[in-house]
Image (cartoon, rainbow, N blue to C red):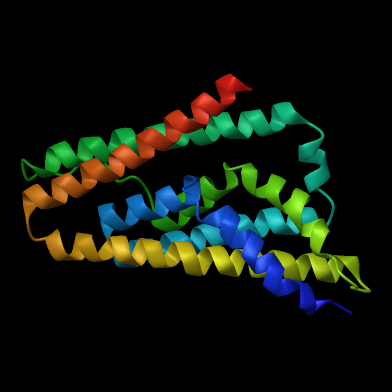
Length: 207
């Protein structure tokens, strides 16, 4: 009922899409540096959840609604940029306070942050809409084929970006005993959030 023969070429296309740095990759790098491997694991599960929601929307046909209403996608981008900016602010604040031994407000649960970061990245649903239909192959059931492709896409991102987050988390674990090093990692994480927010805003201004 499904065509698995297209999966090899599909995975190759996925990797070409995932390897260039984007919101999800940058977020995994930041959360790994900021909070360590356990938080990175929770974060990638959140990202996987967000991607699964978009994949499901495409399978049941809701993705076309978003595609036909560009202002809706722009609104999602604005929310995403605002959220990333807030994460940058709180992370910088925590970094400054950690040098004096005090603690700033938390930037939230990694899983929830992962879901929000993923859902405020409308490029995901646009990728699903543009690419998945190109790999229907000889499938007898379009819905099942789209579901298979969506699941493979989610799994590929979870494995790739999860690995990045865990590797970043090793730096946090190694330097967490040093107040200065921990603050430096938080500053780097905050910088990643800020740069990413600025990239999203720039894309919006360019239209």
